[in-house]
Amino acid sequence: MSRPKGSKNQQAIATPDTVQFTVEERIKFIADLIADRIAEDEADGFPLLKKIQEVDNVSRQQTA
Image (cartoon, rainbow, N blue to C red; front, top):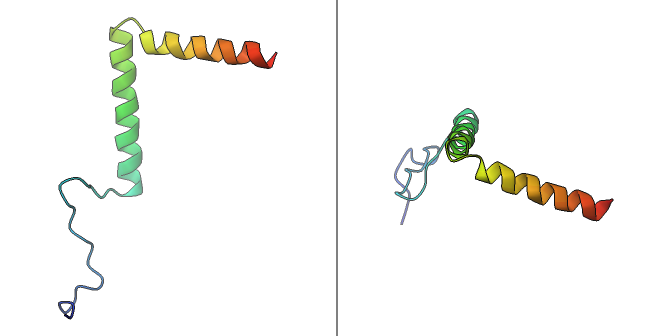
C-alpha cells in the first residue's frame, strides 16, 4: 500500500501518550518542573533538600 502524496515530509501527529517539543520548549518544560518541585520542597520545609544533603555528606565521607 502506498503512502499518501505529500506525506513524506510531514511531522507525525502526536499520540495521546507522546508530545513533540522544540529544544527550547523542552528546556522550558524541564526548568518549570524543577522550579515547581523546589517551590513544593520549600513549602514543606525542605525535606528533599535535606535528603540530598544527607546523601552528599555520606558520599563525601566515604571518599575521604
